[in-house]
Image 1 (cartoon, chains in turn purple, yellow):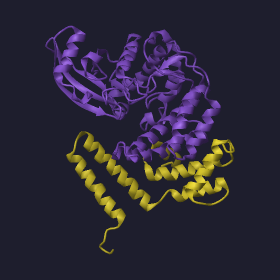
Image 2 (cartoon, chains in turn purple, yellow; image 1 turned 30 degrees about the vertical axis):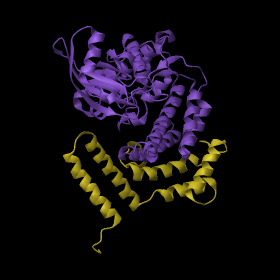
Image 3 (tube, chains in turn blue, green; image 1 turned 180 degrees about the horizontal axis):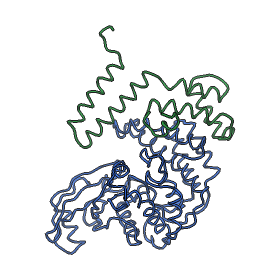
Image 4 (cartoon, each protein chain N blue to C red; image 1 turned 90 degrees about the horizontal axis):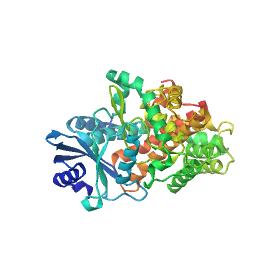
Length: 332
Length: 120
């Protein structure tokens, strides 16, 4: 079990990967979900403090259909070496370590709570900088050739296949939400049926960034990375849920769409088709709505009894309203 | 005033207790106390004004007949799935929008889109 990793065992792994003396004094759980767990690791290397983060598959091995942490670590390294702000991987747990599936990366200082960096005055300059920084990071990621990911077991499919999978999941829950059916049908008429052209992050949004007063310092949570349409990342970043109330700033609660598109194109990204990216915003709204359905089902089915999961079911109506607002007004 | 607290008064008393408990807690427990308080606020609002009549009125207008809400909802979803109804169907988006506004008024009246929709 990942939760049982002892400081000495982890120190031995870090000594192996760094070839130097590493001490680990504490491992503290930061957050745990159904599939993965994150830990703060207090370590020192050659006598100097070396703060680290460890991520592990919660059951020791990846849940069915979930990306292995050892794959996520390698994907993050590809992105980091391509110039994206990503924490450096310092160790991947190997089978012979007997510690399960996981990896260790450097801990990057900064604010990860979006409501704080979106509102506090000391992050004003960061908010100014982040639209261009996000655009540049996405342009670099989307420009990587498929061969950059050789050997990594990553999934992918056409946008229509993505939609069909989500609709099947919706029907499996046995619930009926007219706004969702409306959106599924609307997207079925409009999403392309093209093969993937790029590696997309899959969860690129406010809430998955570490932000300093200078702006974007690290992009987190790469476990939904897959081959797909680059506009998926652009539309998701502009979802209303990720503005955390700053609805006037459609890009993550901090920026304007046209500035994002222009910076993306200037950084070498493909020209952004404005109509096509709007379709991906509608998809993003429905996708977050489906996440709420899945999270509340954890509670309702008894799998993960939790007041937090139960209450998230009452956020389904927020997504219904957002979808209907989109159809009524053309944009949100 | 019978001296017996109503259901909504009991719920409100528990909500006040959770707010007090939250100040003594930290981390995950404090967060869950906050969420539990939010859940009770939803209960209080729904006890005061159920959103169901608004949804039923919308579905009655869209299907052309009255009936149990779940059956009307099923009928409309079937129409949307087989293409008999879509975003261009006259009145459809407006009627569902009104029902969604009534639901969010109970679930989260602080939600940005609710405020935009109602001018609050």
